[in-house]
Amino acid sequence: MLNYYAADLVVLIHFCFILFVILGGFIVIKWRQFIWLHLPAAVWGALIEFYGWVCPLTILENKLRQASGGSYSTGFIEHYIIPVIYPAGLTPDIQLLMGVAVVVVNLFVYTQIVKNLGKQEKDMTESALVSCEWLKQNLNAENQVILDATFFLPRQKRNAQLEYQQHIPGALFFDIDQVADLNNPLPHTLPNTKQFADEVGKMGIDNNMDIVIYDNNHFFAAARVWWMFRVFGYNKVRILDGGLARWTQLGFPLNSEQPVPVRTRFNAQYHPELVFDLKQMMSVQKTHSWQIVDARSTDSFLAQRPQVDKSLQAGHIPNSINLPYARLTDPEQQTLLPNKKLQSLFEETGIDLSKPIVTTCGSGVSAAVIVLVLYQLGRTEIPMYDGSWAEWGRQIDTPKQMKA
Image (cartoon, rainbow, N blue to C red):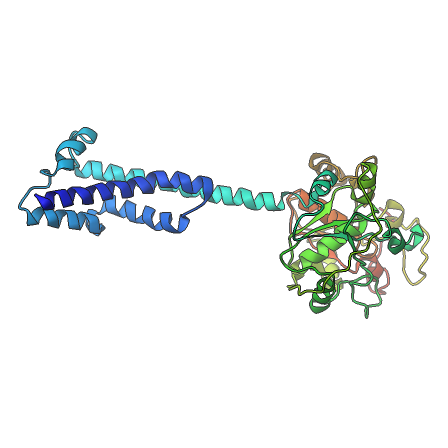
């Protein structure tokens, strides 16, 4: 009789196991916990129902009954409970049906898990922006650093470092002319990996921090700094939508205190797929294999603006498409336009978002605004030509075009 009770206990454990496989899957969907336990259990559960002999519980149950000289259906569970659930008994057809149920349920479970993980990944890359209102509420968040990346072109006759004297509380100044390859005659070109890591480490930034970047010039350099961090393998970086202009428009506080960062270690890893050099640009221009989008103003694109630098020829890369970065922001709030308007703007300009795109501009700054917008539209791996017209326009052997 003891063996009968033991056999019943084994059957009960068996049913609880199958119940965990089926119902536990819905817990896994919601909280994504216990996947490490549930996944092998789900596979095993299906095998149990399809091939009972692979289940140690079934083997143990049968041995206990044989030891007592009883039949399979003389136990309490088999005699009183199973007939209520399965009037015809645990026939091979019922066993097969249970196996199919386990497989179907778990196919559903793990399909939902994959979808949820995909959605989570999408949410992580859905927006590279944070609002001024959000930053105001999270101004003193732990493991967060705010960077003022303001940069002005020489013709704007403004000094970014002087203007930094009034900045968002806690913000550090990020100078794209200093965090650059200072041995390159071209302006603010990318530094090497070691230099970038050293410069960022000096700012007290490590690989656990959330970075919020802003500027006071239409996303101009904030987008480039955001792009630089991504080039060097760091994605926990967002841009303040509207920048300092929107921040002050909302009446949020500024101060003149300059934080003193404690130097730390930042690990950088170069991602060349996000950067185009001159050789690559000459290749795509010749083969027409990529759409080249130029973010400069129309007068610069069409060689209508007088060149201050006499060593730089006027015009644009032949077959490139002009989309001035200034058109991408709301003129009143200084925020980026909504995604639908941005998409319409690209379509009106003749840019096919389904085809390869590389961005360019005057010196590799405003082109990053196009990269940012494309990121917002789901194109997260768009490269930028770092040298841009500052390099292309100085080369003797590069083709140049002045008319649209």
